[in-house]
Image (tube, rainbow, N blue to C red; front, side, top):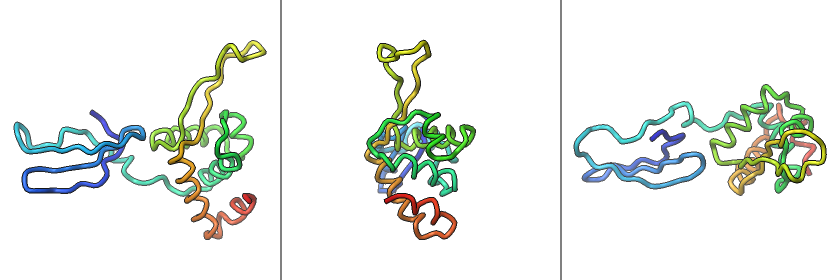
Length: 152
């Protein structure tokens, strides 16, 4: 099993208890020594670090928090936030991995013109909480003050 994050790890007399996060789902697991001496998980170490607070991430957060319960299409979010698609989609993918957004596809029956369904993104409760905290922290940083100032 491959996990995006391994959270709190505690050792006790006979083994190890750890919190595992896989695409936003959190579970507590226990490992006790037995046949092997290795934890039965493969950890993707690049996911252990929290999302870096970049200019593009703050721009996307501002764009999404203008309507925190809305549905976002990539192209429209790119225009709203001022972040080009080459930077936006990796941010959205990381947000998906962290459980901050959920995605889905537009219902083909609701499409008026002849185009394929579009993928949409919606903030989860965790995402609204995390992006709110990110924007609150950004308010206190001079480099982000102009961006965050446009939010009420």
